[in-house]
Length: 405
Image (cartoon, rainbow, N blue to C red; front, top):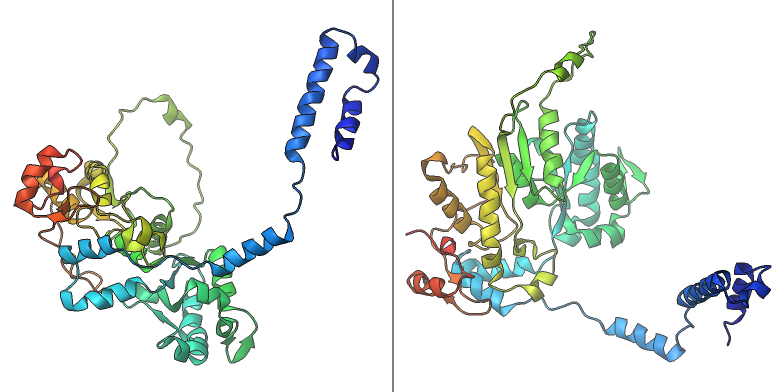
C-alpha cells in the first residue's frame, strides 16, 4: 500500500499511450503486462528497508561494546609443537609469549630507485633520531632501526605494530633537519610506498629471495608468487646490480626472423623460488584466526601438494642452478619432511646446500632430523615405528611425511 505510487507511475511509463491495447488479448498486451510485473518486482527488491527500531539499534551497539577478541590459545597447537621440539624447553614460555604479541611493521627501501640513498640517509639521521626521542621510552627500545642481516641497511624494523602506527599520537609528527613536520609516520610510509620508494613487507618474507644469490644475467622463476612481494624484491635485486648506460644509437630490424622456424627448447631457470601453499601457522602473530582454526592434520593435507610443486621447481632448475624452498609454517611435515622427500626422489641429482655462512646477522638454527606425525586431525602424536603400521591403514597419511631412517 505505502509503496504503490512508484509502481503505478512506472506502469504508465512502460505502457504510455497503450492502455487500451494492454486490455486486448494479444502478444503486445501480454508483453506489456510482463514488463510491468518485472519492473514492479525489481522496484520492490530495491525498496529501502525501514529504519531499525531504537531498541534494536541500541542492542547492536551494546553487542559491539561487549565484543572481545578471540583468546590467543590453542591446546592442540601447544601440545603438537612441544612434542616436536621446535624450540628448547627452557625457551618455550618466551616463545609462546612472543606469538601472542602483535607483529612489528617492517619495510624495504627499493634500491633500484635513484633516490634510495637519500631515503636511507633520512631514515638513519633525522627520522630515526626524532622517533627515538618521541616514542623510544614508550616502546622500550629503538623505535626504528635497520635489520642487521639485510644488506646495505635497506630493510627497516619499526618497534610497534601497524595498529600503533595508525593510531598512536606520538607518531603523528617527526623532525627533518631540526624542522618540525606536521605529518604522521604512517602517512610518510604510505606515500613512499605509493610512489615505489619503499615496500612494506614482513621480515620473514624478505629472507628467501636473499638466499637465491641472484645475479643480473639470471633467469628467475617465482613459483606461487601471489601476492608478489618476493617477486618485487627479486626484480629490485636484479635492477640494483645493473649499470644504466646510454640509449643505443642504432635500430636493429629483425622482422625477417619471424619467417624462420625454430626448434622449441625446454625452459629452465638459474634460480627458482618455491614458496608453496601451507597452513600458515608461522603467521599467527598477525593472523589471530589461526589460534581458532589450527589442527594437527593441516600439514598432512598439504604435504603431497608441496612435494609436487617443489619437484616441478627442481625439474625447471638448470644444472648448477639453485632452488629455495620456503613456507610460512612451523610444521616439520611441511618443511623438513618435504625436503627429505625431494632428496629421496632426486637421488644424486640434487644437493642440499649449507647456507649457514650467508646472511651472518640472521638468527637461525638447524632443522629437525626427526619429528612426529599426527594420524588424525585431533589424535595424539605417534612415534615413527607405530606410524609405519598405521600409515598403511590410513591413506590420508603419506609415508613421505615420516622422518628418514
